[in-house]
Amino acid sequence: MKNRDYLIVMQHILQLMDEGVHVVDPEGNSVVYNRSMAMLEKMESQDVLKKPFAEVFKNVDLKESTLMQALEKRQTTMRKEQTYLNKDGREITTVNTTAPVIEDGRLIGAIEIAKNITDVQKMSRTILELRREMDQPQKSKQHKIKKYSFDNLYGQNEAFLETVALAKRAASTNASVLIYGETGTGKELIAQSIHFASDRQNKPFLAQNCAALPSNLLESILFGTAKGGFTGAVDRPGMFEQANGGTLLLDELNSMPLELQGKLLRVLQEQYIRRVGGTKDLPVDVRILATVNEPPQELLERGILRKDLYYRLNIIEIDIPPLRQRPDDILLLAEQFVEKYNKKYGKQIWMLTDSAKQKLLNYDYPGNVRELENIIMSAISMADDEHALLDKHLVINRRKKLPQQGLYELKEGGLEEYLARIEKSMIENALVAHGGNISKAAESLGIKRQTLQNRIKKYKMKESQRGGES
Ligand SMILES: Nc1ncnc2c1ncn2[C@@H]1O[C@H](COP(=O)(O)OP(=O)(O)OP(=O)(O)O)[C@@H](O)[C@H]1O
Ligand SMILES: [Mg+2]
Image 1 (tube, helix red, strand yellow):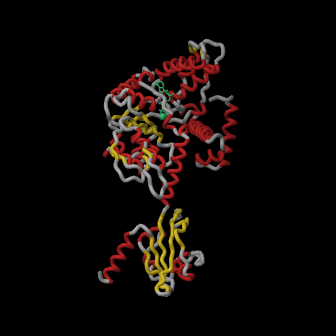
Image 2 (cartoon, protein in one colour):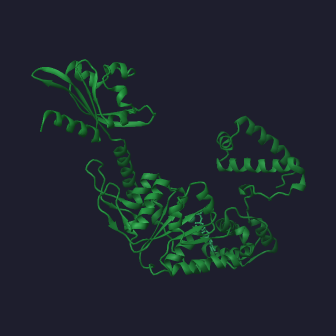
Image 3 (tube, rainbow, N blue to C red):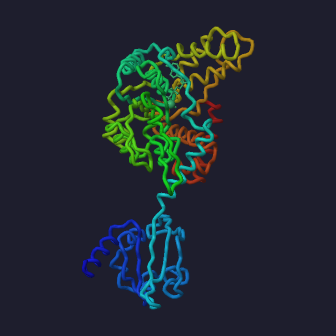
């Protein structure tokens, strides 16, 4: 090969390689500055090339620069890890090797080679977290699975019965199912019932909450990890492999980052998974059930749920109506829970008084069936010798009620009063959500702390004037 061709080949190599390369001549002018280096340091090659290093990198202390030290002191630095903020303010970790180039005792220049290990570092942290997860399986949600079936679902409301009928039909197919319902409506119960009534009932049922973990950890849990020389990762199957032949419930799918949603879609389409850091495609046969706790259409409009994934999962969509839309289920469920907790706590309560029933019917259950169950559970545990559940036992935490449109009648006190009620309600919710922490509640409401304190005072006054009504 001719010298010139050889040079051209070398130049191509420099531009194609993943490592950043920076070469200076004996005068400290940059003569090589490849694409990877430019990307790493967020610089433009033409701003660096043929210019003195000291002039381009003004804020670099020349005594700290290994490249300048290589030139001045003919010092070699091997694989030194450096963490710094690049021009975009992103933290970057590199491993750098710097060396002078000497030919027959004559200094020709100095070379720096930088390898970006930011992502590798992130991945190894993920794997450490994964290992910790594995060492403390009791902490990981996926293993705590109670078995539910359609027999555990109570309800007589027409819309609810339709929902159950649809879920039963879903159980006899292999299709993906998207379950939508507010918190506590029984999404998990329906998902499990589908699995345990399906052909896959003797195969694993695994559930993973997508909101519980950071993105990269969730990815490793779902797809597994492959042994990698530099990451120290172990070979570990992900939930797709573990659930092979069975069902995987992806809970709170709306919390899954879009990028991971894309990867999930590919798995569903191709029915192959690849472990994180791995090279092999492994076939998997897993039925996916997913839940969302906000209306799917809204999630699509807000760009939180990928459309393509939605259409792939939404082969069957099951919407569970909130409890306030099926008041005819309230007492039926209440009686069911009375029986359940009677047994559990060894009590002899065999009825609900009329006023207790009225109290239960008058509430709108933002926490849905779970909230009703909790109300009954604590009532039973508190009832002593009575044989009837009295309304005094039923502790309904009205503060949890969310402000809803149409909840307040405008005629009661005009617009001002109407808005004040909503404001008060929002403040109460914010305080509950932040455990009474005024600064945090103010921040979440987007108002100053002082403003919030004034409002609290204002509404407390009103409350006492009204004699604690609400
Ligand atoms: N129709 C029902 N019959 C009996 N129990 C029910 C019914 N619906 C819900 N429950 C009970 O309500 C509780 C909440 O159900 P589940 O965990 O399935 O709700 P979820 O929709 O998954 O809630 P979240 O969105 O908060 O995860 C469970 O204890 C379940 O047993
Ligand atoms: Mg759930």
